[in-house]
Length: 357
Ligand code: NAD
Image (cartoon, rainbow, N blue to C red):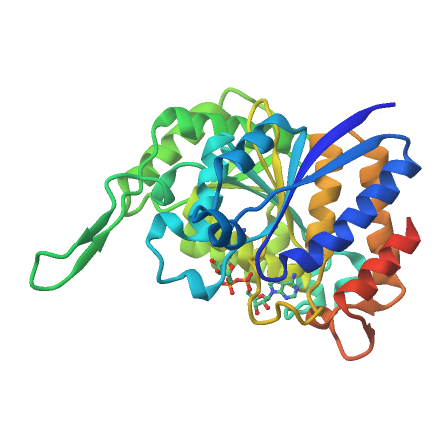
């Protein structure tokens, strides 16, 4: 029997609530599909800082490197905002991504048929939304140096550096091409080349790489226009290829097309080695501990893990189908409440999905 070792990082805020149900579901699904899944839980984020004064302890990172895949819930809490930057949970996240060389973040944005009325946008705008954001994840302004604060001036200053080299742009473009070739073969590269040199390099490099594949239809868009187009006419997009910062912002925006950020999964990958599968949302401190969070983004991330990370396609599909069946029966968490459905708690909707497997 095939055996897998995965690391589960429950993290902070709503993380433990949505992880609990994910564990139960992975156990059941592995039994049903005849494989074994060992779930190793490790501390990461604020909770790891509390114990080790380090949001990404070496032991956690090492265990992740040795695993077949990593399932991560979310990290962060306002109470850590005053810590030195490298001690904050979000810095742990950046360290995990760079330690595993996870340069490609894949964020599918697909409206589930039963949720077309849950979006804040009109049904006719969102009903056929099916796009993928391919975001560069370990370079750009989140990692660029120099960075810092200048305090010895009259007025305090702070600065960051948005930097890419062409090899970093080439490898993420290759990933976008691969994904686009499995879809409608259209890539929209999003940048700000009208004002930023780094974006001009991005645009030139994307053009150079994509022109080698005659099947790919490339378009370019400035990020401000892309934000507007995602709201105005999201169906025009197939694959959106963009940098770390722009991808971070645009994918949260795109999340609302699907009804809630609680619906959006993601996969962070490299060319070899384990990937990290995680919901797009953060730790939602405003609802943490209330058992009202939506666990579906985490469950769809687990489904991506089964498919991309473990090659268990049938199991992945069966989890996705279970989610769809529960939604089509009219069950919702509070974030998706359209006034006409039955609102369940996090654990209740989790158990409904479990029952469908
Ligand atoms: P957030 O995504 O945590 O929350 C934004 C809003 O969406 C909140 O109103 C929240 O209640 C709601 N929300 C998020 N996930 C939900 C879910 N599953 N079900 C129902 N509602 C949900 O973003 P934020 O408030 O900007 O950040 C909170 C903390 O999370 C911060 O510390 C931030 O740095 C961190 N963060 C972590 C990650 C990550 O772990 N990958 C990503 C983004 C933000």
